[in-house]
Length: 343
Ligand code: TLP
Image (cartoon, rainbow, N blue to C red; front, side, top):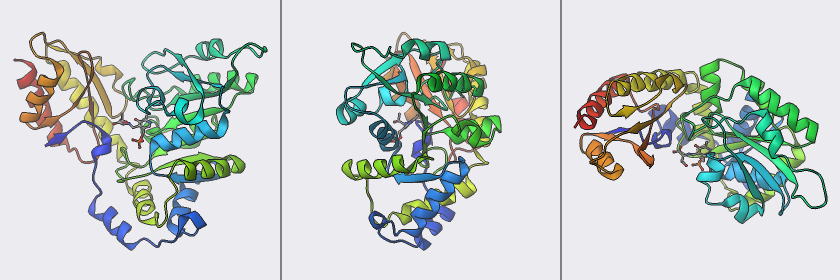
């Protein structure tokens, strides 16, 4: 099966499994798991920050960032199609008691002018803006890379208004691989960054919340416990994360090349609408104009031929490349798409 539903579907390689089996562990609630501590130090250093907290999921990392930097009744500025809005089950409202203020971006990217216009006035009537969240790369936008110049402009606005910034960097290292910019050049503009090990990096579980504010990380550690995310001998999982950071970062470029190739193959199919120049990283979003078959049928027909993708609403579909997808499988997937979608 050529599984293009997500880069979350990767399974650990033999090398990763060996690293997991060998991991030195301890009770992380006591701060005694040396492998977790090593992963946290590595991740913080990678982004040029002082500390990191290992958590079970990207969702938890985002939610700890929101909970630790806001008070119930405040507002958080987000892009309208971001993961926090679409896929976190309303956690910001349910768990942090904040309201999300949506700004509609262009393929997920907001401008500094839009963000500034969304900041509430500091008058006694208005709800108060407590945090600005960006997503890089932007998942629903199609793996879009946030231009560094745009982030810098948004940062200037945030500093002017005294508002902290959080980056959902689930796929930050994909942006880094594509641009070859140092990770810290992005990270320097944010108080908190979440980064996933379980997407393109290929670890089975795990994300990090990264920050230079040690008291914020302490607060987040307490909320991690509240949210049920304090783990014990988590070094087994952290070892997979260390292995991923050591072995799977530079290869992300391969996934991007595969995605671009698949986009070019899809572009040749008359019923497919895709702007292949917009495929910047490992996510391909495209429309299929098929008046006879509903998306469920189309997805099932592809599955029958050995390709899995996700329907993401209307006529829109998402395919994601990752380390379990070879160049040969991209060619095969291209042929299957051409055969099924031409019908
Ligand atoms: N994204 C998943 C699904 O939840 C949609 C996927 O298949 O792409 N931020 C971003 C930008 C993400 O794409 C995801 C996962 C997360 C956060 C959450 O990560 P997890 O699944 O570890 O909670």
